[in-house]
Length: 346
Image (cartoon, rainbow, N blue to C red):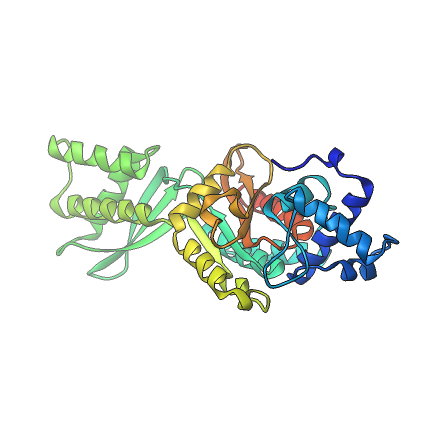
């Protein structure tokens, strides 16, 4: 368990803060002489070295084999983030960049991906956005002829969203059959999800209650099959900026980077982790070995849920990077991105 701040003396707390902040900036273990030059502690390197030794015995600092300096442990980072960090709000330019990317036109998935890419670039981490599968509830369906072989199927959701798909037409499909199929689906399926709609259509056709000609019936069946398959493949996790994880400091530890990239390939595991962050409104910070998924790669995840128009959580946005990322800067940036995506969803 992290050591409560009350158990640290003022001197130990000041030295600990200096070590952590210097490590997060440089990515390298920090020696006592460096701390004595950087800080206004008015302590000799020997005194600082003694305090660092005490902090190491408390499990807050560690000494790598290849260096005489110290670096914070995962427990130490947790203590710093929870009790000592001074947040740095995003600059006006950073806010404008995130808002501009979220406001671009197109499907919601594209706006989510663009916003996540902006967050990745500004934070120098990989950006993540997790949106649970959401089945489209139908309001209206129409078929617009494109050629003798194809038509554009237009689905309007009850939330006002519009999805278009090109469908192949059964031979001999007439404009009347297209209109009949669209009218039938709009009348019968309004208010149902795609999976509910497919079940109802199958029951109606099996019971021979659907007054449709063969072309319209075939068109409806093929359209529902396509949309259901589309829904199954709908992305629930978008990752942008993996390349930013390989910086100059990380190049010296390629095995850790390889482990991290392998973690990112296991998207279902990442999705499960982010799903945990959907509980409540608070920003969640997972540091290193606190989560077994990143125990090998030594990585941290900062995640924040965002809400839709009805106030319910609709997704989670965040970043993943090395444990030495700049928490004071990145945590407020993730918070702002979540607020921006919430506005996008309303």
